[in-house]
Image 1 (cartoon, rainbow, N blue to C red):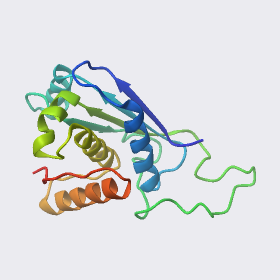
Image 2 (cartoon, one colour):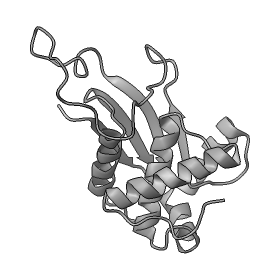
Image 3 (cartoon, one colour):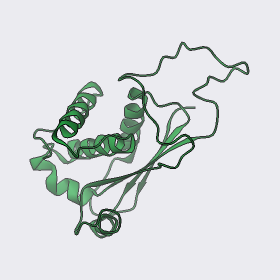
Image 4 (cartoon, rainbow, N blue to C red):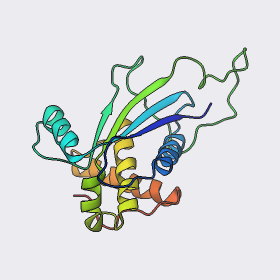
Length: 180
């Protein structure tokens, strides 16, 4: 069973290709070495909804483009990807024919919440096109769910570099300017 990504479009402001976002999210998670039992939710919301989440969880006023909510109390804590590429598929299978990465309950990663209206407004200054901005925000949000941050300049540089690398390797356009 492939990695599960659920995309819910709960807004009417901008058209969104949910299938494209779902496929991109799955490819990013596979690239980061997540096991097949991993699950991620992507929720697309309006400005009012994301402004409420931004105020409630970050204490910041107004709408933002993307928020991430990793599930940190999952068994074993947040997932820590190993290496920078896909997992080694040649590992020893378990005795019942199910690989170690497929065994066990689903690995619930968390939620990425994106506001397409803010993405549309910010696209010319960030990624260039609305579609590229949505891809960038999705990758950015996934990296937050996987434990990356940009609190320091070094962290921000590493995260932006990885975002650009993932987008380029996965056939998506990257940002034209840095987010900071």
